[in-house]
Image (cartoon, rainbow, N blue to C red; front, side, top):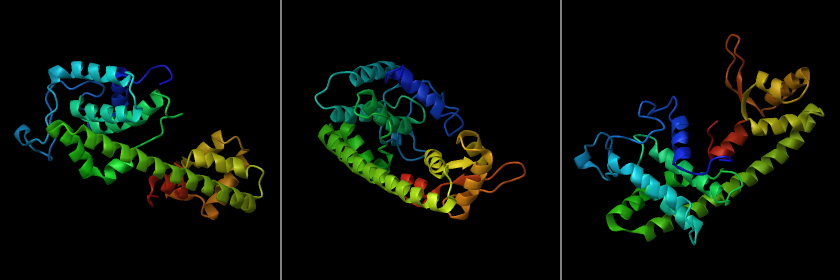
Length: 263
């Protein structure tokens, strides 16, 4: 986004990357759909659908209007973002991956308009927690023209997620201070804090990656990894196999980021 603003071109390129090697990779990644699709229970017919997006012949015009609105002046950018998000989901331009792209658009919009210094704000946790209301509110826009209900729900989500993100950031800073004191005591190495800062940036890695890029003498780097493992800062996620080294994980950091004991 340093060279390309939030646009249809960027969204298509993002979709192509998103669908590479995952579910939906055979559904025209990077291209708008050329056939109808619909939203409803798994396996439902179009007659049973809860919502039917515009036909394929209307997508180009709909997305052109959507793109124009992204860059239009608005009295409140967050209200504008609420409309941008629900309209993208309503157009449903891709055969698959619309939900994931729609959630990615949120931080990209905030970054594009200078509301974030980096595009690192993800509303997925709130939307997953409130999934039923999320779908109901979006559906009520098309069914009942209830824009106010949708926007209020979305803004509550922004507030809740901002609060959750702030708490995570504070927890990460506290963890760094705690481990900073611990690694100096454990290793008595002048490189201990540098190693710690490295694993805060890459909490999932293999020892050769660390040796290669941490800018620490190789023998010292190996010893630091051993010390971190022996004292429980790191643990094996995937054991070594043959010539393949073990995959190590900094569980405490990733669990804070995930908001649960995932590692």
